[in-house]
Length: 249
Length: 141
Image (tube, rainbow over all chains, first blue to last red):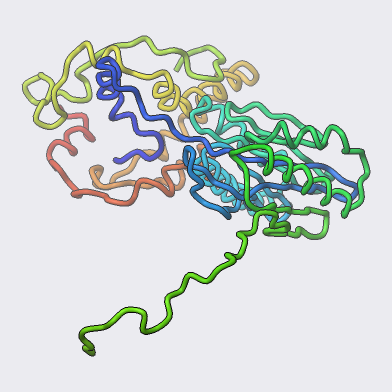
């Protein structure tokens, strides 16, 4: 029976190689700025869109706000594969749970599933998540760290750009913001991460969750559009000679 | 099944056994499982491997011990009796089995785990050695 999940069949080989002086390759963790804040009617989540692989930008427009259920979304920082897989699994489990209880899913349920999974793997799943949503108990915003610890806070930031974004939140967040003020604040915080942290960049994604609807504003701001080149570099037809003309059917 | 209320599996007492890899002569089956040294088996088990392998068993032990402490010995005994009844499977044991009734009793019917969507890519040959599998399943050897 093939077991899925972590595979330990190479542990002995890796131990031997390390004893010989060949270290394990480091799993690259993506830099990110992900933020969330409560406002008067619900929760606003924001994220940048850059995925890095070491010093190289692997994806200029990736999506970091993942779907958990209709009224719950989760932003993911850390190893990209881990955040994708973890949020997809929790989303499936939440759907089954909602079907079996017959109730709208709650944010604390998703938070508990995530924290129990991450605690079981003792931080080997590198996923730092910002989980937010509106359920029957009201708007909720949580952060889940890779080792399984959680915080329930009115405004949160995670990722390599979290310090830049948290500076914006600490200066300007107040309770009971309006929808537009909350969106402006979240975009400002994500932009602080984009411009001041090398691991974050490209565009700003924003997601607004209220009791009745969820709006996913993909690429809400594009402060890093590629500038149009000033000269034309196309060659005109006839620049080079052609020697043979053959039609291939 | 231990009597303590552990939440996470204990650090394992390391041991090197032949139980899983023994062939019909009573030695380690090098042809089937590869070379073996006592030192590598003993020293190179990571803590996370032990934790993951024993996680569900530990959680189950915790629940049953709590039931025993609160309700008395009969509560875990009845639960385990039901599980044993449901696990008796007259079908050909070497083929992959799925037991929905056991999943319901263990509380797994409304959850998805990693093994439910990973690991099915390349199933390999159906039987490596039918006789060995049957002997193992019927506890003959």
